[in-house]
Image 1: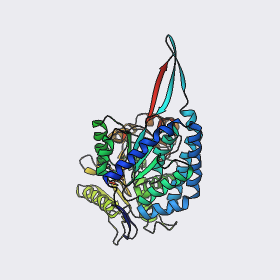
Image 2: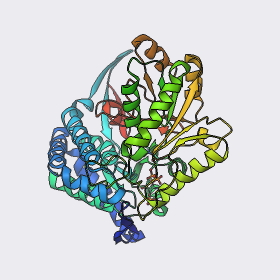
Image 3: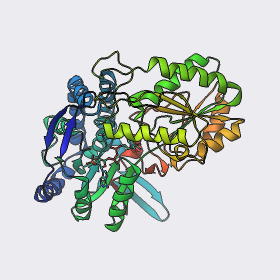
Length: 453
Ligand code: NAP
Protein backbone atom coordinates (compact mmCIF):
# COMPACT_ATOMS: atom_id res chain seq x y z
CA UNK A 1 0.00 0.00 0.00
CA UNK A 2 0.99 3.59 -0.60
CA UNK A 3 -0.05 5.17 2.68
CA UNK A 4 -0.40 8.79 3.78
CA UNK A 5 -0.11 9.12 7.55
CA UNK A 6 0.17 12.59 9.05
CA UNK A 7 3.39 12.39 11.10
CA UNK A 8 2.33 15.34 13.27
CA UNK A 9 -0.81 13.58 14.52
CA UNK A 10 -0.49 9.89 13.61
CA UNK A 11 -3.76 10.13 11.64
CA UNK A 12 -4.13 7.70 8.74
CA UNK A 13 -5.20 9.87 5.81
CA UNK A 14 -5.26 7.69 2.72
CA UNK A 15 -4.22 4.31 1.37
CA UNK A 16 -3.70 3.45 -2.29
CA UNK A 17 -3.11 -0.16 -3.35
CA UNK A 18 0.18 -1.07 -4.97
CA UNK A 19 0.21 -1.56 -8.73
CA UNK A 20 -0.31 -5.14 -9.88
CA UNK A 21 2.41 -6.83 -11.93
CA UNK A 22 0.23 -6.40 -15.03
CA UNK A 23 -0.14 -2.70 -14.35
CA UNK A 24 3.63 -2.35 -13.96
CA UNK A 25 4.21 -4.16 -17.26
CA UNK A 26 1.68 -1.89 -18.96
CA UNK A 27 3.46 1.17 -17.55
CA UNK A 28 6.79 -0.11 -18.93
CA UNK A 29 5.18 -0.60 -22.33
CA UNK A 30 3.92 2.99 -22.28
CA UNK A 31 7.28 4.65 -21.49
CA UNK A 32 9.06 2.38 -23.95
CA UNK A 33 6.50 3.06 -26.67
CA UNK A 34 6.70 6.83 -26.18
CA UNK A 35 10.49 7.03 -26.61
CA UNK A 36 10.72 6.99 -30.43
CA UNK A 37 8.55 10.08 -30.88
CA UNK A 38 9.90 11.99 -27.87
CA UNK A 39 13.54 11.62 -28.87
CA UNK A 40 12.79 12.76 -32.43
CA UNK A 41 11.37 16.09 -31.32
CA UNK A 42 13.81 19.04 -31.39
CA UNK A 43 15.55 19.56 -28.03
CA UNK A 44 14.24 23.14 -28.01
CA UNK A 45 10.66 21.84 -28.08
CA UNK A 46 11.29 19.52 -25.11
CA UNK A 47 13.07 22.38 -23.30
CA UNK A 48 10.06 24.64 -23.81
CA UNK A 49 7.83 22.09 -22.10
CA UNK A 50 10.30 21.84 -19.21
CA UNK A 51 10.25 25.65 -18.86
CA UNK A 52 6.45 25.55 -18.77
CA UNK A 53 6.69 22.93 -16.00
CA UNK A 54 8.86 25.39 -14.03
CA UNK A 55 6.06 27.96 -14.23
CA UNK A 56 3.43 25.46 -13.09
CA UNK A 57 5.55 24.31 -10.14
CA UNK A 58 5.88 27.98 -9.11
CA UNK A 59 2.11 28.51 -9.41
CA UNK A 60 1.35 25.45 -7.28
CA UNK A 61 4.08 25.96 -4.65
CA UNK A 62 1.67 26.41 -1.74
CA UNK A 63 -0.32 23.31 -2.64
CA UNK A 64 2.82 21.16 -3.04
CA UNK A 65 4.24 22.44 0.26
CA UNK A 66 0.99 21.53 2.03
CA UNK A 67 1.10 18.01 0.56
CA UNK A 68 4.68 17.50 1.80
CA UNK A 69 3.74 18.80 5.26
CA UNK A 70 0.91 16.28 5.41
CA UNK A 71 2.86 13.34 4.01
CA UNK A 72 6.25 13.65 5.70
CA UNK A 73 5.97 16.48 8.19
CA UNK A 74 8.09 19.06 6.38
CA UNK A 75 7.83 22.56 7.80
CA UNK A 76 5.54 24.52 5.50
CA UNK A 77 8.11 27.24 4.77
CA UNK A 78 10.74 24.65 3.95
CA UNK A 79 8.28 23.04 1.55
CA UNK A 80 7.81 26.34 -0.28
CA UNK A 81 11.60 26.74 -0.38
CA UNK A 82 11.95 23.24 -1.81
CA UNK A 83 9.54 24.04 -4.63
CA UNK A 84 11.61 27.18 -5.32
CA UNK A 85 14.64 24.94 -5.93
CA UNK A 86 12.52 22.70 -8.18
CA UNK A 87 11.56 25.77 -10.24
CA UNK A 88 15.28 26.66 -10.52
CA UNK A 89 16.14 23.14 -11.70
CA UNK A 90 13.45 23.03 -14.38
CA UNK A 91 14.39 26.56 -15.46
CA UNK A 92 18.10 25.72 -15.62
CA UNK A 93 17.64 22.65 -17.81
CA UNK A 94 14.95 24.36 -19.88
CA UNK A 95 17.31 27.25 -20.62
CA UNK A 96 20.66 25.45 -20.87
CA UNK A 97 19.68 21.86 -21.74
CA UNK A 98 19.70 22.28 -25.54
CA UNK A 99 23.22 23.76 -25.46
CA UNK A 100 24.44 21.06 -23.07
CA UNK A 101 23.34 18.33 -25.49
CA UNK A 102 24.43 20.02 -28.73
CA UNK A 103 26.77 18.08 -31.02
CA UNK A 104 30.40 18.53 -30.03
CA UNK A 105 32.95 18.64 -32.87
CA UNK A 106 36.23 16.96 -32.00
CA UNK A 107 39.55 17.39 -33.79
CA UNK A 108 41.18 13.96 -33.85
CA UNK A 109 44.40 12.57 -35.32
CA UNK A 110 43.98 11.98 -39.04
CA UNK A 111 40.49 13.39 -39.39
CA UNK A 112 37.45 14.87 -37.78
CA UNK A 113 34.74 13.58 -35.51
CA UNK A 114 31.66 14.69 -33.70
CA UNK A 115 30.29 13.56 -30.37
CA UNK A 116 26.53 13.29 -30.62
CA UNK A 117 24.65 13.39 -27.33
CA UNK A 118 21.58 11.20 -27.58
CA UNK A 119 19.16 9.69 -25.04
CA UNK A 120 19.19 6.03 -23.96
CA UNK A 121 15.46 5.29 -23.76
CA UNK A 122 13.04 4.53 -20.95
CA UNK A 123 14.48 5.00 -17.45
CA UNK A 124 13.29 4.03 -13.99
CA UNK A 125 13.45 6.57 -11.14
CA UNK A 126 13.15 5.36 -7.53
CA UNK A 127 12.76 8.29 -5.18
CA UNK A 128 12.79 8.95 -1.40
CA UNK A 129 10.41 10.85 0.86
CA UNK A 130 12.75 13.40 2.38
CA UNK A 131 12.52 15.93 -0.48
CA UNK A 132 9.51 14.62 -2.40
CA UNK A 133 9.61 17.29 -5.13
CA UNK A 134 13.29 18.22 -5.34
CA UNK A 135 14.60 14.65 -5.69
CA UNK A 136 12.26 13.95 -8.60
CA UNK A 137 13.19 17.25 -10.28
CA UNK A 138 16.93 16.47 -10.22
CA UNK A 139 16.35 13.29 -12.20
CA UNK A 140 13.43 14.25 -14.39
CA UNK A 141 14.22 17.75 -15.71
CA UNK A 142 17.54 16.92 -17.43
CA UNK A 143 16.33 13.58 -18.77
CA UNK A 144 13.18 15.05 -20.30
CA UNK A 145 15.25 17.66 -22.13
CA UNK A 146 17.70 14.99 -23.29
CA UNK A 147 14.84 12.90 -24.69
CA UNK A 148 14.64 9.96 -22.29
CA UNK A 149 11.24 8.79 -21.04
CA UNK A 150 10.54 8.09 -17.38
CA UNK A 151 8.81 5.56 -15.17
CA UNK A 152 8.72 6.99 -11.66
CA UNK A 153 8.34 5.00 -8.45
CA UNK A 154 8.09 7.40 -5.54
CA UNK A 155 8.42 6.57 -1.83
CA UNK A 156 5.41 4.70 -0.52
CA UNK A 157 4.57 7.47 1.96
CA UNK A 158 4.40 10.15 -0.79
CA UNK A 159 1.63 9.16 -3.23
CA UNK A 160 0.04 12.62 -3.25
CA UNK A 161 3.34 14.31 -4.13
CA UNK A 162 3.84 11.69 -6.83
CA UNK A 163 0.44 12.36 -8.39
CA UNK A 164 0.75 16.16 -8.19
CA UNK A 165 4.16 16.08 -9.91
CA UNK A 166 2.82 13.86 -12.72
CA UNK A 167 -0.17 16.16 -13.15
CA UNK A 168 2.06 19.26 -13.43
CA UNK A 169 4.34 17.63 -15.99
CA UNK A 170 1.42 16.49 -18.12
CA UNK A 171 -0.25 19.88 -17.91
CA UNK A 172 3.02 21.45 -19.04
CA UNK A 173 2.92 19.35 -22.19
CA UNK A 174 4.94 16.23 -21.32
CA UNK A 175 3.00 13.47 -23.12
CA UNK A 176 1.15 11.11 -20.77
CA UNK A 177 3.33 8.17 -21.80
CA UNK A 178 6.65 10.05 -21.63
CA UNK A 179 6.30 10.43 -17.85
CA UNK A 180 4.41 7.68 -16.05
CA UNK A 181 3.96 7.46 -12.30
CA UNK A 182 3.70 3.92 -10.94
CA UNK A 183 2.66 2.80 -7.48
CA UNK A 184 4.96 -0.20 -7.80
CA UNK A 185 6.31 -1.65 -4.58
CA UNK A 186 10.04 -1.90 -3.96
CA UNK A 187 9.67 -5.68 -4.45
CA UNK A 188 8.64 -5.08 -8.07
CA UNK A 189 11.76 -3.03 -8.82
CA UNK A 190 13.96 -6.03 -9.75
CA UNK A 191 11.44 -7.15 -12.41
CA UNK A 192 11.34 -3.62 -13.85
CA UNK A 193 15.14 -3.58 -14.06
CA UNK A 194 15.17 -7.00 -15.70
CA UNK A 195 12.84 -5.80 -18.45
CA UNK A 196 14.87 -5.16 -21.62
CA UNK A 197 12.74 -2.10 -22.41
CA UNK A 198 14.20 -0.23 -19.39
CA UNK A 199 17.68 1.21 -20.08
CA UNK A 200 18.78 2.51 -16.67
CA UNK A 201 17.84 3.44 -13.13
CA UNK A 202 18.35 6.39 -10.85
CA UNK A 203 17.83 5.72 -7.16
CA UNK A 204 17.96 8.24 -4.36
CA UNK A 205 17.62 6.55 -1.03
CA UNK A 206 19.28 4.49 1.65
CA UNK A 207 22.41 2.39 1.41
CA UNK A 208 20.34 -0.79 1.64
CA UNK A 209 18.14 0.19 -1.29
CA UNK A 210 21.29 1.20 -3.18
CA UNK A 211 22.87 -2.20 -2.66
CA UNK A 212 19.77 -3.96 -3.89
CA UNK A 213 19.19 -1.70 -6.92
CA UNK A 214 22.89 -1.72 -7.88
CA UNK A 215 22.94 -5.53 -7.72
CA UNK A 216 19.87 -5.82 -9.96
CA UNK A 217 21.20 -3.19 -12.35
CA UNK A 218 24.51 -5.06 -12.52
CA UNK A 219 22.83 -8.41 -13.09
CA UNK A 220 20.98 -6.86 -16.03
CA UNK A 221 23.86 -4.70 -17.27
CA UNK A 222 21.94 -1.48 -16.82
CA UNK A 223 23.39 1.92 -16.04
CA UNK A 224 22.66 3.03 -12.45
CA UNK A 225 23.01 6.40 -10.72
CA UNK A 226 22.90 6.07 -6.94
CA UNK A 227 22.42 9.00 -4.57
CA UNK A 228 22.66 7.41 -1.14
CA UNK A 229 23.27 8.31 2.46
CA UNK A 230 25.84 10.57 4.01
CA UNK A 231 27.38 11.63 7.28
CA UNK A 232 28.87 14.89 6.15
CA UNK A 233 31.67 16.43 8.20
CA UNK A 234 31.56 20.14 9.05
CA UNK A 235 34.96 21.44 10.14
CA UNK A 236 35.19 24.63 12.20
CA UNK A 237 38.77 25.91 11.95
CA UNK A 238 38.20 29.26 13.63
CA UNK A 239 35.57 31.96 13.83
CA UNK A 240 35.36 35.68 14.47
CA UNK A 241 31.68 35.41 15.40
CA UNK A 242 30.92 32.27 17.32
CA UNK A 243 27.23 33.05 17.85
CA UNK A 244 26.68 33.36 14.13
CA UNK A 245 28.71 30.21 13.37
CA UNK A 246 26.69 28.26 15.95
CA UNK A 247 23.35 29.55 14.66
CA UNK A 248 24.17 28.87 11.01
CA UNK A 249 25.68 25.43 11.54
CA UNK A 250 22.72 24.43 13.74
CA UNK A 251 20.31 25.61 11.03
CA UNK A 252 22.15 23.53 8.43
CA UNK A 253 21.92 20.42 10.61
CA UNK A 254 18.31 20.89 11.65
CA UNK A 255 16.96 21.67 8.17
CA UNK A 256 14.25 19.18 7.18
CA UNK A 257 14.31 17.92 10.80
CA UNK A 258 17.80 16.56 10.21
CA UNK A 259 16.59 14.31 7.38
CA UNK A 260 18.85 15.57 4.59
CA UNK A 261 21.42 13.35 2.94
CA UNK A 262 23.96 16.18 2.92
CA UNK A 263 23.23 17.65 6.36
CA UNK A 264 26.37 18.28 8.44
CA UNK A 265 25.86 15.30 10.72
CA UNK A 266 29.38 15.40 12.21
CA UNK A 267 30.74 18.74 13.43
CA UNK A 268 34.50 18.68 13.95
CA UNK A 269 35.73 21.67 15.92
CA UNK A 270 39.33 22.69 16.56
CA UNK A 271 40.35 22.56 20.21
CA UNK A 272 40.63 26.30 20.87
CA UNK A 273 37.01 26.88 19.82
CA UNK A 274 35.54 23.53 20.93
CA UNK A 275 34.38 24.21 24.52
CA UNK A 276 32.59 27.46 23.73
CA UNK A 277 31.14 26.00 20.52
CA UNK A 278 29.68 22.96 22.30
CA UNK A 279 28.26 25.08 25.12
CA UNK A 280 26.58 27.54 22.74
CA UNK A 281 25.44 24.89 20.28
CA UNK A 282 23.85 22.88 23.10
CA UNK A 283 21.99 25.97 24.34
CA UNK A 284 20.83 26.81 20.82
CA UNK A 285 19.60 23.29 20.09
CA UNK A 286 17.82 22.99 23.44
CA UNK A 287 16.15 26.40 23.41
CA UNK A 288 15.42 27.20 19.78
CA UNK A 289 14.31 23.83 18.42
CA UNK A 290 10.96 23.35 20.18
CA UNK A 291 8.43 20.93 18.71
CA UNK A 292 5.36 22.25 16.94
CA UNK A 293 2.88 21.84 14.11
CA UNK A 294 4.79 21.73 10.80
CA UNK A 295 1.89 23.60 9.14
CA UNK A 296 2.60 26.59 11.43
CA UNK A 297 5.33 28.77 9.88
CA UNK A 298 6.64 29.64 13.37
CA UNK A 299 7.49 26.01 14.19
CA UNK A 300 11.17 25.17 14.48
CA UNK A 301 11.11 21.41 15.18
CA UNK A 302 8.59 19.41 13.12
CA UNK A 303 8.03 15.67 13.49
CA UNK A 304 10.19 13.15 11.67
CA UNK A 305 8.62 11.53 8.61
CA UNK A 306 7.19 8.57 10.52
CA UNK A 307 7.10 7.00 13.96
CA UNK A 308 9.30 4.17 12.63
CA UNK A 309 11.94 6.66 11.44
CA UNK A 310 11.77 8.49 14.78
CA UNK A 311 12.15 5.29 16.78
CA UNK A 312 15.18 4.26 14.74
CA UNK A 313 16.95 7.57 15.46
CA UNK A 314 16.01 7.42 19.18
CA UNK A 315 17.48 3.91 19.27
CA UNK A 316 20.73 5.08 17.64
CA UNK A 317 21.06 7.85 20.25
CA UNK A 318 20.29 5.45 23.13
CA UNK A 319 22.91 2.99 21.86
CA UNK A 320 25.52 5.76 21.60
CA UNK A 321 24.84 6.79 25.21
CA UNK A 322 24.98 3.17 26.36
CA UNK A 323 28.34 2.84 24.61
CA UNK A 324 29.72 5.88 26.45
CA UNK A 325 28.86 9.00 24.41
CA UNK A 326 27.90 12.17 26.30
CA UNK A 327 24.32 13.32 25.80
CA UNK A 328 24.41 17.13 26.07
CA UNK A 329 20.72 17.68 25.38
CA UNK A 330 17.65 15.93 23.99
CA UNK A 331 17.67 12.30 22.91
CA UNK A 332 14.15 11.22 23.81
CA UNK A 333 11.05 10.57 21.78
CA UNK A 334 8.38 13.11 22.72
CA UNK A 335 5.17 11.61 24.14
CA UNK A 336 2.08 11.73 21.97
CA UNK A 337 0.80 10.36 18.69
CA UNK A 338 3.21 12.37 16.48
CA UNK A 339 6.69 11.30 15.32
CA UNK A 340 8.59 13.88 17.38
CA UNK A 341 12.09 13.56 18.80
CA UNK A 342 13.88 16.06 21.01
CA UNK A 343 16.66 17.92 19.20
CA UNK A 344 19.86 16.28 20.36
CA UNK A 345 23.59 16.97 20.82
CA UNK A 346 26.06 14.14 21.41
CA UNK A 347 29.79 14.52 22.14
CA UNK A 348 32.63 12.12 22.97
CA UNK A 349 31.61 9.68 20.26
CA UNK A 350 34.52 7.33 19.52
CA UNK A 351 35.25 4.87 16.68
CA UNK A 352 34.23 1.95 18.92
CA UNK A 353 30.63 3.24 19.01
CA UNK A 354 28.09 2.51 16.26
CA UNK A 355 27.19 6.20 15.98
CA UNK A 356 30.71 7.06 14.80
CA UNK A 357 30.25 5.42 11.40
CA UNK A 358 26.44 5.36 10.99
CA UNK A 359 24.22 7.89 9.28
CA UNK A 360 21.83 9.41 11.84
CA UNK A 361 18.82 10.63 9.87
CA UNK A 362 17.17 13.01 12.32
CA UNK A 363 17.70 16.11 14.48
CA UNK A 364 20.93 14.92 16.10
CA UNK A 365 24.33 16.65 16.04
CA UNK A 366 27.57 14.84 16.82
CA UNK A 367 30.42 17.15 17.83
CA UNK A 368 34.06 16.02 17.75
CA UNK A 369 37.14 17.77 19.13
CA UNK A 370 40.24 17.96 16.93
CA UNK A 371 43.64 19.05 18.24
CA UNK A 372 44.89 20.17 14.81
CA UNK A 373 43.84 20.83 11.24
CA UNK A 374 45.31 17.46 10.22
CA UNK A 375 43.37 15.64 12.91
CA UNK A 376 40.17 17.37 11.80
CA UNK A 377 40.76 16.17 8.23
CA UNK A 378 41.52 12.65 9.47
CA UNK A 379 38.25 12.52 11.45
CA UNK A 380 36.33 13.93 8.46
CA UNK A 381 37.71 11.23 6.16
CA UNK A 382 37.25 8.40 8.67
CA UNK A 383 33.77 7.57 7.36
CA UNK A 384 32.28 5.03 5.01
CA UNK A 385 30.42 7.92 3.34
CA UNK A 386 31.67 10.67 1.04
CA UNK A 387 28.75 12.84 0.01
CA UNK A 388 29.33 16.46 1.05
CA UNK A 389 31.43 18.38 3.55
CA UNK A 390 31.95 21.94 4.70
CA UNK A 391 34.82 23.98 6.07
CA UNK A 392 34.20 27.03 8.21
CA UNK A 393 36.73 29.70 9.11
CA UNK A 394 38.11 33.15 8.41
CA UNK A 395 41.11 32.40 6.18
CA UNK A 396 40.03 31.47 2.61
CA UNK A 397 43.41 29.93 1.71
CA UNK A 398 43.41 27.71 4.77
CA UNK A 399 39.80 26.64 4.15
CA UNK A 400 40.60 25.76 0.57
CA UNK A 401 43.67 23.77 1.64
CA UNK A 402 41.49 21.76 4.01
CA UNK A 403 38.70 21.37 1.43
CA UNK A 404 41.15 19.89 -1.06
CA UNK A 405 42.06 17.11 1.39
CA UNK A 406 38.52 15.98 2.13
CA UNK A 407 37.28 12.77 0.50
CA UNK A 408 33.81 13.68 -0.72
CA UNK A 409 31.84 14.59 -3.81
CA UNK A 410 31.22 18.17 -2.69
CA UNK A 411 32.73 20.69 -0.26
CA UNK A 412 31.17 24.01 0.68
CA UNK A 413 33.06 26.85 2.40
CA UNK A 414 31.24 28.72 5.20
CA UNK A 415 27.90 27.15 4.34
CA UNK A 416 26.53 23.62 4.52
CA UNK A 417 23.83 21.36 3.24
CA UNK A 418 23.06 23.36 0.12
CA UNK A 419 22.20 22.45 -3.44
CA UNK A 420 21.79 24.53 -6.56
CA UNK A 421 20.65 23.75 -10.08
CA UNK A 422 23.92 24.54 -11.87
CA UNK A 423 26.31 22.80 -9.44
CA UNK A 424 26.85 19.03 -9.74
CA UNK A 425 25.64 17.05 -6.71
CA UNK A 426 26.69 13.55 -5.69
CA UNK A 427 29.00 11.42 -3.61
CA UNK A 428 31.76 8.86 -3.50
CA UNK A 429 32.36 5.77 -1.31
CA UNK A 430 29.08 4.44 0.16
CA UNK A 431 27.27 7.68 -0.68
CA UNK A 432 26.78 6.41 -4.19
CA UNK A 433 27.90 6.93 -7.74
CA UNK A 434 27.14 9.42 -10.48
CA UNK A 435 26.10 13.06 -10.37
CA UNK A 436 22.91 15.04 -10.63
CA UNK A 437 22.43 18.75 -11.46
CA UNK A 438 24.64 21.02 -13.53
CA UNK A 439 26.17 19.87 -16.83
CA UNK A 440 27.10 16.51 -15.25
CA UNK A 441 23.46 15.75 -14.40
CA UNK A 442 22.34 15.61 -18.01
CA UNK A 443 25.26 13.38 -19.08
CA UNK A 444 24.45 10.33 -16.93
CA UNK A 445 21.84 8.66 -19.12
CA UNK A 446 23.30 9.92 -22.37
CA UNK A 447 24.85 8.04 -25.27
CA UNK A 448 27.91 10.09 -26.16
CA UNK A 449 28.18 8.69 -29.63
CA UNK A 450 31.41 9.19 -31.59
CA UNK A 451 30.92 9.70 -35.32
CA UNK A 452 34.21 9.71 -37.25
CA UNK A 453 34.22 11.33 -40.66
P1 NAP B 1 14.75 4.21 1.22
O1 NAP B 1 14.03 3.52 2.28
O2 NAP B 1 15.94 3.57 0.62
O3 NAP B 1 13.67 4.55 0.10
C1 NAP B 1 14.01 5.25 -1.09
C2 NAP B 1 13.24 4.66 -2.23
O4 NAP B 1 13.75 3.36 -2.51
C3 NAP B 1 11.76 4.49 -1.95
O5 NAP B 1 11.02 4.70 -3.13
C4 NAP B 1 11.68 3.02 -1.54
O6 NAP B 1 10.42 2.46 -1.75
C5 NAP B 1 12.70 2.41 -2.43
N1 NAP B 1 13.30 1.17 -1.94
C6 NAP B 1 13.56 0.82 -0.66
N2 NAP B 1 14.16 -0.38 -0.62
C7 NAP B 1 14.28 -0.80 -1.90
C8 NAP B 1 14.79 -1.97 -2.51
N3 NAP B 1 15.33 -2.95 -1.79
N4 NAP B 1 14.73 -2.08 -3.84
C9 NAP B 1 14.20 -1.10 -4.59
N5 NAP B 1 13.69 0.04 -4.07
C10 NAP B 1 13.72 0.19 -2.74
O7 NAP B 1 15.26 5.64 1.66
P2 NAP B 1 14.45 6.76 2.42
O8 NAP B 1 14.33 6.33 3.83
O9 NAP B 1 13.23 7.12 1.66
O10 NAP B 1 15.45 8.01 2.27
C11 NAP B 1 16.42 8.28 3.20
C12 NAP B 1 17.79 7.91 2.67
O11 NAP B 1 18.01 8.54 1.41
C13 NAP B 1 18.89 8.43 3.56
O12 NAP B 1 19.89 7.46 3.69
C14 NAP B 1 19.41 9.64 2.80
O13 NAP B 1 20.72 10.01 3.14
C15 NAP B 1 19.27 9.20 1.40
N6 NAP B 1 19.25 10.34 0.47
C16 NAP B 1 20.31 10.56 -0.35
C17 NAP B 1 20.33 11.66 -1.19
C18 NAP B 1 21.50 11.94 -2.08
O14 NAP B 1 21.38 12.78 -2.96
N7 NAP B 1 22.65 11.29 -1.91
C19 NAP B 1 19.25 12.53 -1.19
C20 NAP B 1 18.18 12.27 -0.34
C21 NAP B 1 18.19 11.16 0.48
P3 NAP B 1 9.35 2.31 -0.55
O15 NAP B 1 9.07 3.68 -0.07
O16 NAP B 1 8.21 1.69 -1.26
O17 NAP B 1 10.00 1.45 0.46
